[in-house]
Image 1: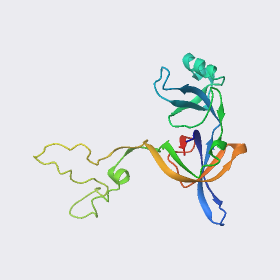
Image 2: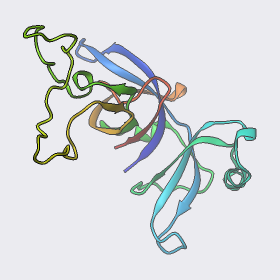
Image 3: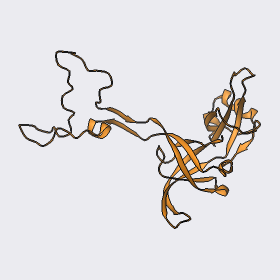
Image 4: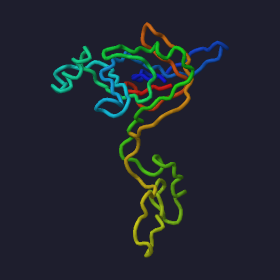
Length: 206
């Protein structure tokens, strides 16, 4: 298994080998630096590889983080992720590029979905609203309606679909087809959409 950290650039479309126009997501995948190697025999108690991606300013980095990155011989990084099932023979300070996915046909991509803020039930859960403006209703088209909580149970059950904070969830999309890899620009093209806005970080695993 291989893994890499990426950043969503946006969406476009390309023509595949059959001449079909395919919608793709453009991802800047890597280069990622190996900043820590954990082993089950060591003090960590499990096997994992820590990858870091995307430079950030030293003034915005704590002293502990600076020392951590110095051990790997790299500059401060903005995104740090652990991969537990990577089957690659790597050393501290190695650089992993998008070329590690050259032989991969399908990938799983995790990201944080777009935050929508506080939303009502129509947008958040797809409710149809109360209906038309009859029987004396006024401005009630997008209302949730009754909650079914009368004198018994005299409370609202947990998990009731109501208005609230929407989006901002971690989502994994599985089996996205790798359409093309442009190694000289660290670009990965996958068929379809991935979670998150432009510029958000993504975790890519095969």
